[in-house]
Image (cartoon, rainbow, N blue to C red; front, side, top):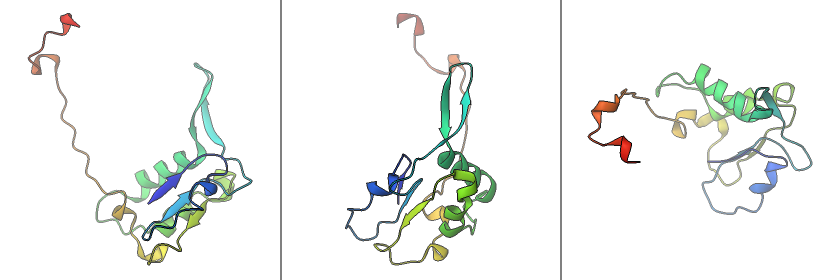
Length: 128
């Protein structure tokens, strides 16, 4: 799966001809891809709308590896009213419909966190 998130990002996968590639983009050719919100303390936008809503979809709809959310659900989640651009999808090189492909086929992992303390490492940090 190829995901492109920039202005006119559909153009980034138009010339691909390799089989079994599924591609999606934040905007079609001729469209801008817009930011979601900024951090006023540093004066820059920190996340684009497409990335923001993709992350929101994964956090809300794909809670476990057993999730049945499809790529069709994933692509439709960032509709034009949210993204303010048209999400592009190229599926002619992929033999399954978006409805048949689970999101966890591409975004499937379990997060395990183990906190460390500075004394867990046998290293003299003062030498840096």
